[in-house]
Length: 140
Image (tube, rainbow, N blue to C red; front, side):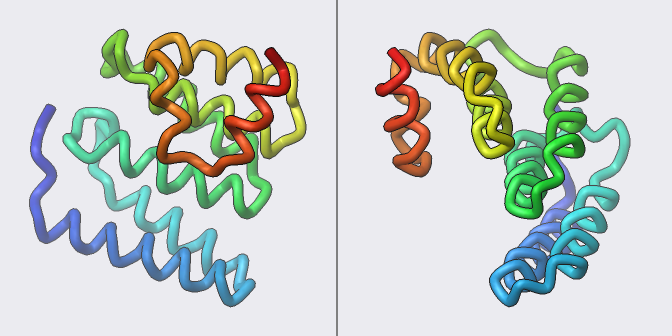
């Protein structure tokens, strides 16, 4: 993986911060615009960078908050098909489960959470909102 230049990383981070600030103010259009602008600044091929996983998480979490689940699924699916993930990368698998959970597709959420749980040996829930682990525990 290539290292993204620090100045570009800082510019993208600033846009994500602006997106989350807009989201907190319920300015959904600005939040979406800022997040998408940040994603667009990531040079192609987007999945070749050292920061790709955190940026994928950032934009997908934003799409989840905005209810744009189809957009979030598209980005995660592109990451899966990019061949840049290792067998131990549970984060994107967990993210896919979280998207399904927020979308209300609970059976699919369980399937993806189960995969992430197996890969991470249970650690995938540690830094995530409690609602995901509660849901998963109740489904078992």
